[in-house]
Image 1 (tube, one colour):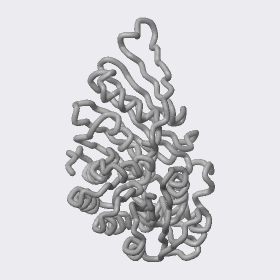
Image 2 (image 1 turned 90 degrees about the horizontal axis):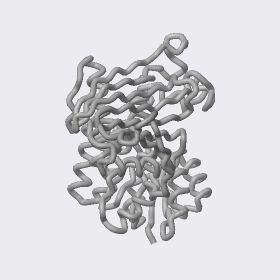
Image 3 (image 1 turned 180 degrees about the vertical axis):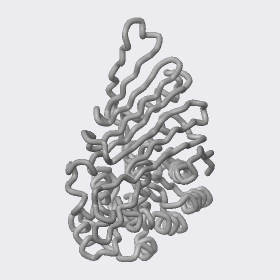
Image 4 (image 1 turned 180 degrees about the horizontal axis):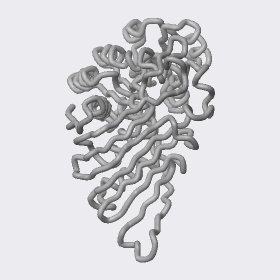
Length: 351
C-alpha cells in the first residue's frame, strides 16, 4: 500500500484526493491544514483517518510514501524541503516557488537526496499534449522555426466564474499583498510549461506585463489593492533557434479557460488546442500540402495522469520529466519575464 499525505486542504486538494482514490494500491492516510474546520471537512469527505495542524508532525509520525503539497504558493518551498529532508517524495502544486532562489534550493535538495519530486502542471494530463510532444520530438515536423502560444481567460471582463468584485477567491489573484504574482504567476507558468514541453527550453525572453484600470476608486476594494498584472505578452527565443510569442490575459472575453499552442517546423506543423479537447491534436505535413492546407485531427489514447506518474515514480524510483528541475526552468521563465518587464529589455534565461 502506497500511503499519501496531503498538505493543504483547499479547493485543489480535492482534485488530488479524488485522483488518488482511483489508483489501486494507493490510500490517502493523513491530511494537514492550519484551518480546523477545513481539514476536518476534507478528511470526512475523503475518509482520511488522521488530520494534523502541523505538517512536520505529519511527516514525522505517518510513515508516508509521498505527499501532495497543495499549500499556498509561498509555502511550497518550506513544506517540500521538509519532506525531501525526510526522503519523502513530493508532488508540489505549481508554480514550484515564489522566487527563483527558493526554486533552486528545492531542485538542488531533490537532486542531492535523490528524492522523487514532481510539479503538478495539470495540463500535462492531456493525452493530446503528450502525443503531440512525442511527435515533435521524433522530428516529424522537422526543425522548429516559429511558435504561437496563448492562455486566455475572461473573468475580469465577464462574470463567467462569478463577480470578482465580491469574490475573495478571485480578488486575491489581483493583489500582490495577498500573494498573487498576477496572470504571470497564476497561469503564465502553465503556458510556459506547455510550450516548452512541446518545443524545448527558452534562452531569451522579452516580456511586457500590464495591469489595467478596473474602474475601482483608488484601485482598492477593502483590503485588496488591485496591483497584480492582468496580461502578458512575451517574445521568446528558444535554444533550438526558433522564435515565438507567448501571451496570456484575464480580459479575453469569450474564453473561459483556453490554452493553445501552434508549432511550425520546416516539414510541418502541430496545433494543441485544449478547448477542442484533451484527447487530440492537429497536424499538417508539408509534403501533403499539394492543394490547400490539409490539417488532420488526431485522436489519442489515454496516457497516465500526473498523479499516476507520481505513484509510478515512487514505485520505480525513476524521476518523471515533470520534476523539480523542470519546475526550476519554469520559475526562471517567470523570473526573467518580471525582470524584462522592469528593465524593458530582452533577458537571457539562466537557472
